[in-house]
Length: 188
Length: 264
Image (cartoon, rainbow over the protein chains, first blue to last red):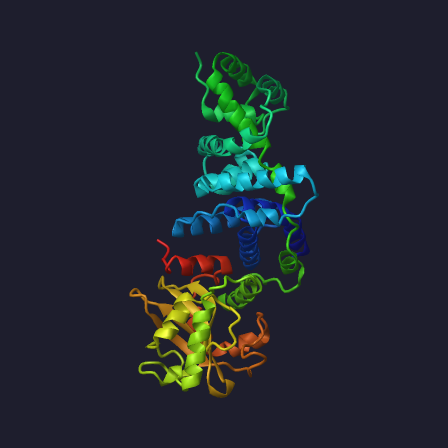
């Protein structure tokens, strides 16, 4: 294994982990998925082209492991265990409690989505991948990615609504319009 | 009136809609409150989802060590090294906190009862003798069927006669379990049993473990050379049987709890 490969894997680990936890809805299960993904990647290091993007390659591996499992067993992650969320380290105070609740709410809401939708939400909304990158990773046409993702996000928002309405200030939509409209060029 | 699709509205919310289309979306938003509601959902789900993940605990050492250590798999490795490593990783990933009514107790009870009666597996009708290598036979002890059926791998149950050490899907689309077996005078055997369509576990191979027993009756965990040596007797059959790497603990738990459902 080249040093470049190993170094990139270590650097990518936090993002892969966030992706895996978003899919499984659980920290421990997410770590297990990361471990399995890394083992699979290590055993197939010869299939990776140096110079190509390691993150996309490993996302594909993680995604395939996850989808195989989810389809085979009709598996849906259990709602995030409050104890898992409670165990998260962080500062004291109200902000931390709110953050924990928010993470729990996000993970819980993710479980309502199909495995394919979860992958797209984790890639685009949590990791910040573009639609095009998500299309390449999932092997899905970009139009399909966008329509699936749009449906998933509507459903996700509906699931999150109780948590959001509990303690929030409603976004200033016109301001949001100005903000999104003023952003620099598209990255479709 | 131009209809704005959900995908276009989402792209607008994400700031990636082509500039030439943005005025159209803005016009539509001004006259359609429903679109505004949708836009809000896209904005929230794009910008609001990543932040909570910043509160995750640090990456566990086991994951970093796995990548940082120099024992990473070489290219084009065979199945056997992967098996050994995955068993080792699965063992290391076993959670310490087991439920009070852990099914390990079943194996513990069965093991203690059999030890007390001098009732050894290979004395049972149809049970292959450990030296029989690949000769398959049917486990006739109900307790041992239960141990294979219900006990998680690598659970600390030192008095158990049979301890599963890994679970995998076979090339024949059956769930199989590798196990260790304790004979008299601490003699250890290793084997593989697979779950047939009727739900009965059938021994596919068994052999004498080639390294002496240590500690509590089980060899130290780890995909080291010693383990490779002790499993050498069952390697040929195992290599043919294994379709993929050994299940991780969480998956195995789900599999046991779900009644050993096969993937479709």
